[in-house]
Image (cartoon, rainbow, N blue to C red; front, side, top):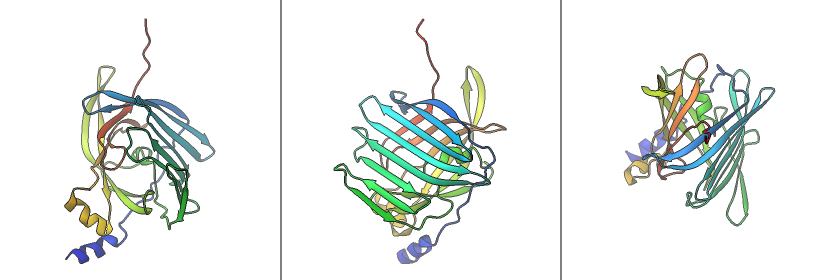
Length: 247
């Protein structure tokens, strides 16, 4: 039975190339990372620039303990979204295992740099629905009424492609400047697949679901995320913040 399940999971899951409904534009947002108890542990910037149909989006999170989470994602937005490259760096006390990984989706090249500076590169057949670093942008372009599946590369260790299932868990209420609003709570579930996907739940190593709150409508907006920034790490919140001035 175990071998049968493994063989079934190795069959490529259905995934979706996401159509461009709301083009992404130039932007500069400010975010914070907090614990579930509300303690602020990091602040950062989300900067997007656009050249033609190509978007470069960089999210930099600076932790108060000196740690850094820095991810730059470059993608095209013509009729559909297509990942071009993704470079993700994590280092410092908040991240037990440092990471410096680059996905070149055009060349199918996955490269990582270890803490000694040694660079390792490998080629991997990458699907057209590969979307590393793009979940929040994609969720502003999909229908809450249907499940969307996308592919991402796990670049560390032996690189492999896994799938993310993204679907609505309903609306949640929040306030903006004291005014009540509602956002759609999208649940992002990692589908590991293969023998690892069968064994992971049995040994308690299955990644937790991620939540992304999106304000839907004619101009969708990111509101908040909740999840782990690395596998089996603590659950944190990432959300927008506004400026405050000292009188």
